Image (cartoon, rainbow, N blue to C red):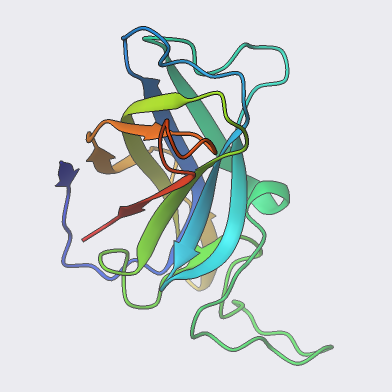
Length: 181
């Protein structure tokens, strides 16, 4: 099931992505394999994010883990319809922020998260929640505009359908795409 918050505003730029991944609380639901979330815009890959902490045994039965991706190293700028300025040309303000993902027509119907497991140790997804921080062009003084990221997270959607992921066809599917309708 998908629960979403809708807005009449067309959202242009995402500066941070927060994913909360919950593992089903049933026997053999946890995995030691790497699970990845690929961010898609209009069906095309724009970034692969690892749902992994190096020092934590991720995706244990009944656990819920939060993964936050922010800034230019995690979310390098990926323009959609806004053209890149030619080298050596600048504008004040720039027509786009220094990092983040542009969604020119909003998120609904354009944003997808594709989950992928990298191994045959099955993982049963219980719930995935998506949060973002938008980057918006804002006035910083009476005559100056700058791209600023929101300070608070905005809830976007929850995908609650249980899905078994595994590279073993007898246990589940290798990928599962979460659509924002």
